[in-house]
Picture 1 (cartoon, rainbow, N blue to C red):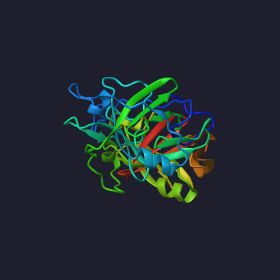
Picture 2 (tube, helix red, strand yellow):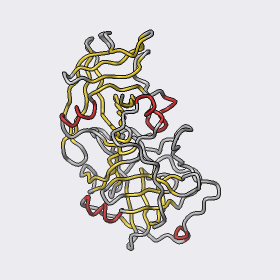
Picture 3 (cartoon, one colour):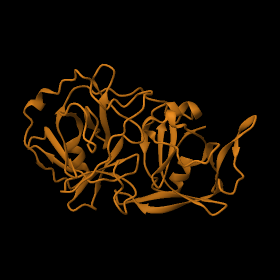
Picture 4 (tube, rainbow, N blue to C red):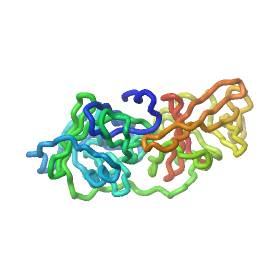
Length: 327
């Protein structure tokens, strides 16, 4: 996975300028709704892949234009293992009319299916911090990488380049794309939610009120074995069972207690206060980072990502992830 661009906290890029890098699609361990990034051995590329059209720089200048020209499903003409830096999954990618973005993998029958989760789905945005205007995909993982996109004159073929690693061609397709079974919206599933791939993922909050609404409450720490593409909870202290955020702007890790439910920690290194620090999103509007201070004076600088189906929370502490499911 590539490092974030300097000075950019929140987003991922689908570019129209001549530089680029993109996060590698993560390889999920076995589990529910495994991401299916590699195609079945018998997968035939679409017929249009036999003679893909020539492409030239797309030149998007507005978000509406980018959505209009990229809306729909795109099948990947590559077979076998994908390059380390690529747009979409093994089957391609999809852009909805509302600008939501999904890489496409394969379901059990070999048909293209949406890939969901913190590191997969995102939202198209327009980002002006490129050498030329570029379109971005603001992923739930809150990362921004430039990606040079070219399209054919008839809009049926697309290629992209990520720092010299060309992906594609991708060809527009009208075949049906399956979607994972929807999870109950707003469901608080505790430990059970850790085993469910999250959907309806959203990145950094745009206001303090929004941020509080998304984090307040009690959360169960998800063990690494259940996380699939959600990341490893490597920054939690030993014995951590969860975390709790209170309306009075205090927080505490929930620690294992002998013969009792997990309880808020009283250790000065594992509880304290929290505050929101304003930054700027790729959309140009506000985006807030969560700063957690311990009583002992330690700090967690966290980018917040949440999902609504089920309700889950991912805290990115300078690249180290903590993933929780709502109680």
